[in-house]
Image 1 (tube, rainbow, N blue to C red):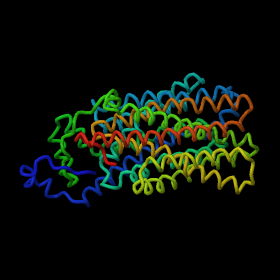
Image 2: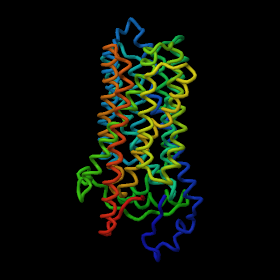
Image 3: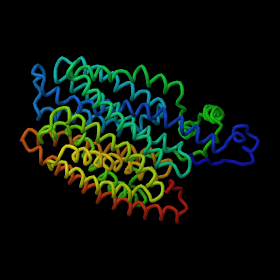
Image 4: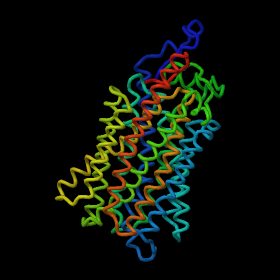
Length: 450
């Protein structure tokens, strides 16, 4: 967390300031990351559980789900996430980041119960759409909280660490699919999705501190001082009021903003398309159901390793070059999945694809947090995540169309092409945002950490 003193003469005798230390800042960052990690874990489970139980849903004659309809149904949650991500910034301005995390977790937990009890595909689709509203609202705010509290030089590492929770959620979802499908049916997995309401929400309410920047911006100085005192950290300087999405297009920012949006679109099309359809596509390539679900576990294990590696590398070389390199390597890995290989070799390729696939998109978010100032950061991350959700909507739908036409082999090629698309745009976004940062610094404007 970057600590700034507003007025040294007024604050030097303040007990809050005297208790500030690097250790205090790191302890607070660890607390924030730990709590946000838990809620993002549940976010990941809820998000990926549909892909994990989809083979069982397709095999359920009472449900009457076709592959084409399954792709459309899978897009309902991602469309909800699009609206949730775009609306999270303005709503957070009103209720605060902590309350937004609580509200988002509550929404997707209740919606999971609706899916579990759904008497029809229409009700199930409504439940997935509502779940998406909560899922989409949660992640940008959790990322912004971690970026705000991160110690200097550790932002990318902590963002990568946070996003390992998403991949852990994918692993847990696939494990639940293996455990529950045969014995208890696909509905049981969605009943487990209600647990965050009783586990995560109380922990967030009790232990997660509110954003100091939010409290100060809202004039709630006494609360900000209380949080700072409780954790032994310094109050940040009063930041400019949070800016609207239109501010991302002023002062030459429109080019990097649009390019980051395009990169996020390609990255999320890839992430959600692969996570939704990987087990089904691998079954189409001749692997049995157990192996197909095991691939989902392995690709998310690779994702965890990739997040930690990418975060460390990005703290040294920058998030933009890492995102570009990771997307390019993802294109190779995903394309190779369409080649039938010995099972052991396939597992290695799936793992390596996961190493680069998920962390590439996370590094897009990390690049955005580093290229926009504090007042614009939450809006920039939320808009990149929100616009990127169009890709998240398209990915599952496109996979469904390919599966319905019997062209599952082309799915890997299409998703690999999406990775190439993202590579190009993240490189262009990095160049344009670097120019914009240089102009802002020359004009004496505040900029985010590079």
